Image (cartoon, rainbow, N blue to C red; front, side):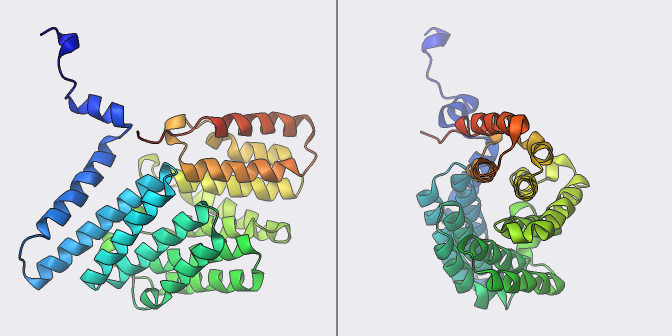
Length: 306
């Protein structure tokens, strides 16, 4: 059989057809393996570990689906994460799962639903040393800001700070990556929340600059590029609110240079927020140029697998 007619079964061809990365494949494999192992009989401690593993794998799949803009699928995976957390009796994973649900709801344009998920996770968050508790409060602050509930926003930001003081870490934090909530990410979330109000522009800019500085010392390979991009978008919005369009353009310059393969749903939506903020100010020639670049960015994004 000619090579051109041979079955296309090679791994790289499969990944290309599905628009998957090797990391996507690893997540799917880990999730399938964990649930497969749970079909057997194990000591209680081993079963708890397997539920924890299955929950983390499901959560990572939820994040992957969310990055592609597949909110319904992402929420299904997040619910699986919470079910695993309940079976494991793990408050850190419960908190993280509620955080996933709050995150997905927020970016799907449902801030009230996001607040509900955050608040439903508060009891577990109060019992865990995980930095997921910091994340949950930070998520709630941002969604409350989107709703304009400013007295509650500041309360949630304060709660995130207090949770940080008591967060000694757990098994999730030991995994690192998306399973832990760093100080840089916390600063970004606070900036993103405060950026919803022009009256909070100074505080928002201060938090955003601090977050950018914090990310600057993190090796690029270990940097959460989505949150780093979000930080720069929040910084741009605060500068636009002060009429500093050139400063805003400088803030998002590296974001707008990102290749389409990195333009996740959250990043594209964040750039859209900058676009809307810019639309209500007179930015002159600098504003026109930035508007064109923002529009071009949002028209080319990461593809959803078929």
